[in-house]
Length: 452
Image (cartoon, rainbow, N blue to C red; front, side, top):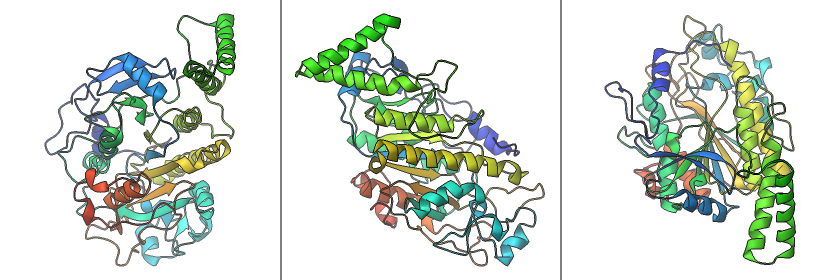
């Protein structure tokens, strides 16, 4: 994990994030209220899935209804995974213009040599950060769309406010629902909280809804269990499920087989305290500090188990608020994030799920082009984003504006693509859904081909 010093704004933004149902601590004047504030939260253990969940927005719906909803929800649909790089990841390090004289002048300590990372094939002015080699590999396979300069007009350099804008899909501090939450309100059901799932243990504001339930789970601690049954009786129980399912052609037999298949999928990553909690067809990177690799491994296993997921949110490894000693921790955090995302893609491919999932990687802003006096970089404007998946149109989205004419009056990279246009394109091309039902002023944002 990064040892870089974070700014006070970043620390406050983390402390003031709303816990749904718990209200807000005193928010400083001008800060938007985070999406999801005030949603009711109830603890819930699904008998159908063996998951301990925090379910949001289910004031009047009983646990039995939720259990039944999870068990009978349609599976096999498309899934969007939102991966957040918290703190403002430095665009000019993720993809760096090695031979640009202005780059070398602005970053005498942080500039990377051309030999450090390979050329970015779609714009040879740029090189991949060496720690992004796993993403470069996927890009070479046509499975990554790169957004080298993404943001929005009139950028806000507050972690709290800029992140809020990305989460709600609008530069509106008053919105209390997430952009994916509003999509789920339109297409989701009232009895399947797994349709929107946060893997970080608390509600992701991106998924905040008003009409349908969504859930949060500690993405490393769950397993399939049967109440008051364990040991040999439990083994016999699951043996009988197999017999019932095979012998019966009824709905009950189908349910028995489904339950058995689910148990078999969940059992390998239940964990016993001595072995890793998840098993998968591929090796994920090991990290004692970050849960991110295990969270992605668990997500792949949940998809393979047939759980009815549609929108998933998770924070990536590390912290990218690199005001000081940026080179020290940045490379480590990027390497763990990138290698975990490569493993996740390979896991999906090994399970035959690769055409069902698109991963969207984003950060609230990029960093200032000029390094500061602490061998770090301060808050900027446009950042770098990625879309990953076998169905992704693996082409560059928007141009790199360069450092001669591509910096604003504050010395920040100007955006050449707008995050709301990316959201609109994903809604329409991945989910086949009218973006105007979710995004304010959706028609004003340019679309680009993201899905093939």
